[in-house]
Amino acid sequence: MNIDYLTTGLVGFSEDEFPEARDLTVEFSTWAYGLNLTYTVPSLGIVMPWGWLKETEAEMRAWTLADVPCGTLTEPYHDSDQGWNVMLWQHGDHVFVAEGDGDWDEVRESNTYTRWFKVPRELYFEAWAAALDQLRTL
Image 1: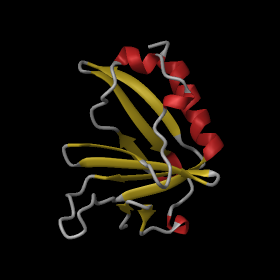
Image 2: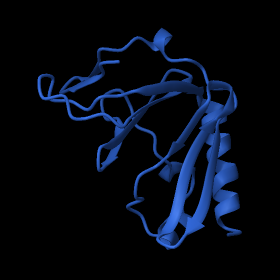
Image 3: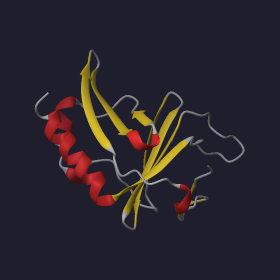
Image 4: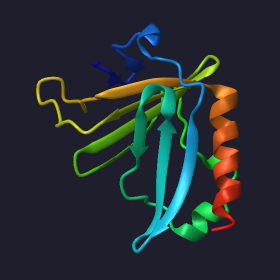
């Protein structure tokens, strides 16, 4: 899928191309280097571990729902690390997630996305609320 981020916002995608994830879970786990964050959508066979988290464990434990990754069409949330990239934005009643482990597309001057889905907005924030509660018990 080609998703381009222009000065006017995101273009080049169709909302209908994003399968709906009605069973998203957001999970934290710990390892030697800090926290791991994973989005899992069993119905779509997606396990999406994030790259290195920029925030410290203490910062993330203090997060509220206002801090979770979620952008807009004009200002999407994006992160990348060593060939991995993710972009998230809210539009209408859904949060859209595009993830890629592809190379930078030199012709389009853009990241390549290889997996994508949309989550009902309410479910997205419910999954994050549960994850933040779980994080505080780790």
